[in-house]
Amino acid sequence: MSDINIRKIGRTGRITLTRPQALNALSYPMCLAIEDALDAWATDDDVAMVIIDAEGDRAFCAGGDIQEMYDTASAGDFAYGRRFWADEYRMNAKMFDFPKPVATFMQGFTMGGGVGVGCHGSHRVVGESSQVAMPEVGIGLVPDVGGSYILAKAPGHMGEYLGLTAARMSAGDAITAGFADYFIREEYWPQLIKQLEASADYTLIDSAAERAPEGPVTAQLDEINRHFAGASLLDVVNSLTSEESDFTAKTLKLMRRNSPLAMGAGLELIRRGRAFDSLRPALEQEYRFTYRSAEHGEFIEGIRAAIIDKDRNPKWQNDLSAPPADKIVQMLMPLGQNKLTFEKEDHT
Image 1: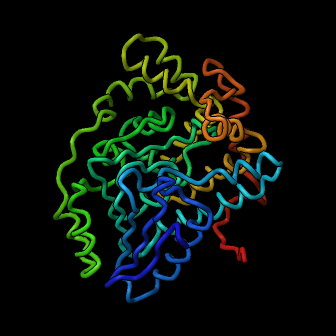
Image 2: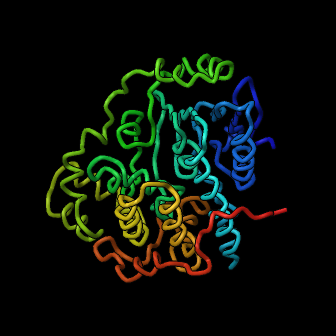
Image 3: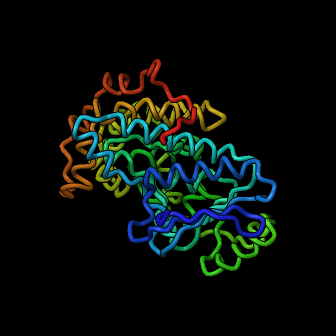
């Protein structure tokens, strides 16, 4: 496949995303190919560790390739998107549970679906150019691909802030929030990867790492904790609107771009995620929303505004000052027989 290069080098299984012209956006075939590689390498004695990287300077993976999701859902076919998400989440779970070290090297943008590839490994490396984000609420989705679980484990209420504002994290922020482990200058990555391929000695990553500069989100943690502790989205909004400061003004500006329905549900998912000790329950909760997102949510409108018409002016069904509490509950109800099962199906 021209969009991804999967091979074995030395003692490692190697995955390289190879569509830099599209910011290495994750397509459905790429997702399935990564899963197949993980399945094969889990029991392959020749593979001692897995290394994942990407071509180009601008992005490790800027998200999922959602054009076909939009096209099918707009035509009333919701099955395609549901199948994509179910298969993608299963791959995310296998990455999280993989029995061998997985090192990822995330330059530039790592967002949305890219987090599902890059941020569930055991040795997650960022550098000077890294910008990590969960921007789903801007297109009418919740933080997914297991992102709600990482957000739930972030210090204080940093996860709520990142999930509801879609703010970008620097390398330092990503490490603080639990999306990455190591800061290594990007000029050293090629040589380090060669050493890892030859030896599979993952302690080399520890040796190469240095302290990351503090990120701008981390520097605001006191204010974040004060305003994002509320039980509901409306509580958060009320807290922000009750105080006039640079932080509250900028935060409200970010949130006003996003779907109130998605933010309300995302907040609930992050809170639920604090009770989980593995990724799969979080993925199952996320799937409840994404399964319904095109038919009953605002996903189609979010994609229209961001990707299709590019007017950046989505017509959300609700205002930030009046989040739809009942609809938020409905979007997260159990799916019954349609629940996420993590069972691999034959798509041939």
